[in-house]
Structure formats: C-alpha cells, structure tokens
Image 1 (cartoon, rainbow, N blue to C red):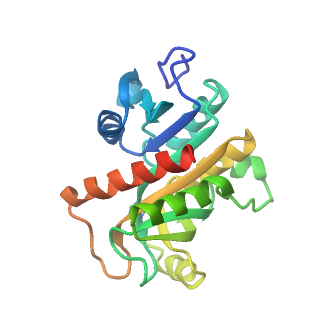
Image 2 (image 1 turned 135 degrees about the vertical axis):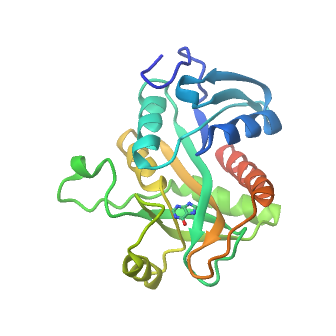
Image 3 (image 1 turned 45 degrees about the vertical axis):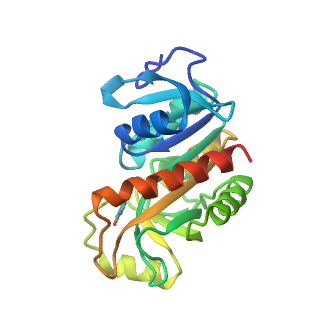
Length: 234
Ligand code: HPA
C-alpha cells in the first residue's frame, strides 16, 4: 500500500494504462482485459489488473492535471515497479488539420511548468515519449485504420485558459493539441528509467469550437485502448 494506492505488492502489472477518468479505467478493464480485478479504490481512483492476450496489464485512473498524475505515476513506478506507463486521454485540437476524433500521439510535451520544475530549476527539460512506444503506437494506429498525428503537444495547468496569445504561439510552433498530464508523466518516467507515452483523442477544437458528443467519446476511447495495448506489447 502507498498513500494513494491500496493495492498489495505484486497487484500492479509492469504495464499500466492511465486514463484520466477512473470510470474509464473500469470500462476499459471490463471490455479489454481477462480476469480483471479491482486493485485500488482509494479516493475513488479505480485501478484494475488483468491480462490482455496473456500479458499482465493494470489500467489505473490518473485524475486530471499534472499534480494528480504525478502522484500516481510516482507511486506506480517507485513502489509497485511499473515500467511502462501509457496515458490514454483527450486533448483539444490546435491545428486545422487535426480533426475531432483524430488520435494524437505525443512525441514531446511542452508546458509552462510541471510539478518537476522545482527539480529542474533553471533547466528547460524537454519531456519526450519513449521512442519504441511512440513508433509502435503509430504503427498500431495505422494498422487499425485510426486517423492519427505524431508530434508535440502542450500540457497546460488550466482547462479554462484565458491566454489566447499563448495558445496562438504554440499553434504557430506546430503544437498539435492541448491536454493536462503528459509532460509530467514523461518527466517522472525519465527520472526513474521507465517508458512513457501519451495517446489522446481530439475531443474538442480550440479553433473551431467543436466538441465531441459524450456517446462518441466511447468509440474513440476504445481505439486508444487498442493502440496503447498493441504498442505496449509490440
Ligand atoms: N484543454 C485542456 N485539456 C483538454 C482539452 C482542452 O481543450 N480538451 C481535452 N483536454
């Protein structure tokens, strides 16, 4: 047990998929895993461990925002021995060619700051995905016929962001989408020699104002789970 995870030692697999929403973790475990058992429910942050094609996998919620994912990623890696962490979430599209429902595979994650900024001090560390996972996810997305983009994203601390100038600068520098967790996930993984990747469905678009209806999010979420599982065990 850790402060935020009630699982017994050995209950967590080396490969962990991390949706933001704990109920998505439950849905994904019930839909994709065999013999899934609930291993955490502390603060309602559900985690499940089961098998996919014979491989042991944990699907554990991350919560929203970098402080939240930082807590879970730290405990999963340091206390439970997780070695591969794949975020599956949503993002806001920031380029005209990045359409609603497309999948964004995050090669890098820019930010204004992260919970690791105090450690890096004056260094502008470049949080980056594990290349093997990145390549395998892109190949899986292509095989599954899921429209996708590979490139940089922006991990923001605010959903209700009023800095339109900041979004404009990031768009001008080719950033594909905005979400709120990947940069810190990449930082924590780098610090502990683990592999990390963020895969995000475009659920809304900053330029067009469009948003995906709730019912359609499930289909996109299922595509991401498939991509994440295939990438993790490629
Ligand atoms: N902003 C921040 N995070 C997000 C967004 C957004 O527009 N969409 C999904 N996650």
